[in-house]
Image (cartoon, rainbow, N blue to C red):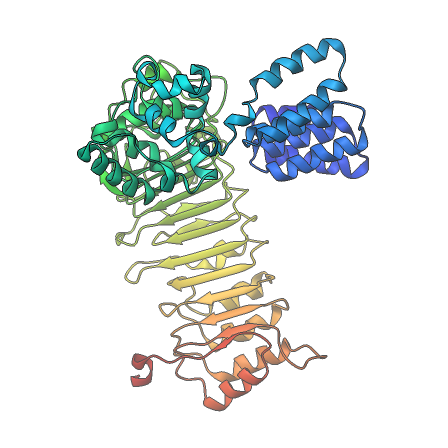
Length: 565
């Protein structure tokens, strides 16, 4: 239990859930169920978390724990009526001391007349006045006897309301007889109706007539929405978007910025978004240097006691400052700053791999690295414009890596944990053979190669050196694959898919023997998906036999270029 609490406190919810699943499989326990519900709720698995809470109620109907947990989960999702009902049941079953605490929590749950779909219970005129005027001048608000605190809760949950109430913009009206105001509101509605949910507040603040909503002390709507907004996607860093980011950055979990160059080190950029778990930079847009980063060093102090929670980093046609290891507010960056990163995607980030990523893939010892290696599970490094020779990628240190896509980079080593590899190396470069690097991949199941790396019967040599339990193989037209390589696949007893494209050296005999070896004695057919598109030297009778003896998808298309050859 203590270990699960520690994992939850460090936001490692999936590990906590796995640990609690094992413990609960032995015997159901209310405290363990409550911890699992907390972990699932925090990782957006609220429906299964509610199931755990309901199981707690069934196991101990006279105790308040299950009712209390269900109330917290439902209140967080805006289901206030049900949440209040569960909280009242918890109060009934609690001790007098605990009842006082729960009564206070019950009072914090938004009343039913301000439910998640609250625009159904408030007149359209009132909502229009809230958005258009200051509270003091909105007579409709006073008539509805709504307090400022409730209005603030409305604004904090603005994006949740839009998510649950898809028809809001069809029913929203502005109380004004001025033609110009009506025309502007119509354009505003049209613009918002086509916007992504995460762009709504940005669109509101960038609209000139509603740039500032003085709901309280001159603050804009985005200042309130920032309390709840967790995802922001901006194609361009304009002045209006800058103002929005200042209000919402501290709570953003998912960030997407359309920039082509980041003028600050990645460590500093992440410090601006202290809670972000996914960040996406690019493709192409305004320069990050157009954004004023000064206030962030005041708003978001560097937490030197923990690693950054970032889990996914994506850079598309974007470069980042090579200045690594910069002090953040006078503190050296922790070695485990990137320890939570699980996914890294770098696409067309010229020139080469920028800092701090380069140190992740160099064949250094761990003591020489600036940062501890992240536990990467998914990796994409692609640069289609890269034509010059460069250093080879050393991935053997990434012992958690499961899927990797490498384009136009040579590979020096791969980890034994790798399960799927997509590899493409452009013609004209001296690519190393994949035989030695793949021989260490004991768990490899899916292999895709398009380009250099399989010359000289490399696949045959690989399978002779270390038999692999390959499930799917995809070889592109720029690769070299021979009949001997196809014959070597006879050792892959669990092969489920084979795709060969544009390979002139392949004939029908080895394919027939392979399919024949994979045939099921009961059905007489092989359970495999086979594609031999643009392979001109496979005889027609061999294609007919293959088509008749495969219990899966079969393709043997020929383009006009292949026919002419």
